[in-house]
Length: 136
Image 1 (cartoon, one colour):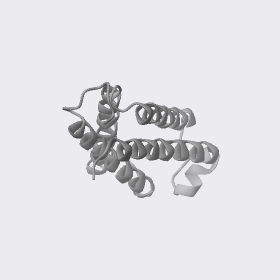
Image 2 (spheres, rainbow, N blue to C red):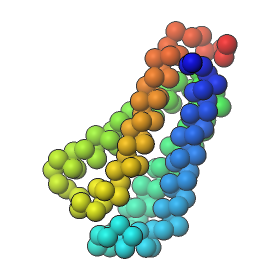
Image 3 (cartoon, rainbow, N blue to C red):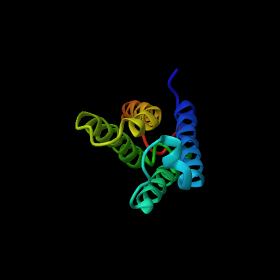
Image 4 (spheres, rainbow, N blue to C red):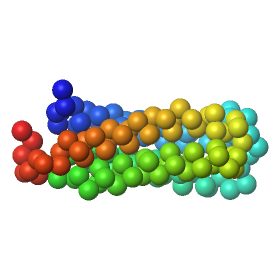
């Protein structure tokens, strides 16, 4: 079942996910606080910096999808980034650092990112013993 073709498709899907989220939230930034039901942020540029990082992760996933074996180190970086985002989200839930409405809004995206983190981990395990010059 596992193949490089499958992982390439999953990396492309992850890239598309990040591009779609970054693009749609960038367009919705002025109305995002009313959509979520929280007070407006004091520093809206913080949201835009987060969206830039989401877009950048999409670019990295696109690169890995094109050459997964030679860019395993980038896949490792992406895996740890996804796990770190999930960890920070869980920490903010445990410490009640963010409003409940914001946590509910972010939960589906964080769950999907956690799933992609697991997929990246599985790819790293799958490709561990493969030579980097072949895709057979």
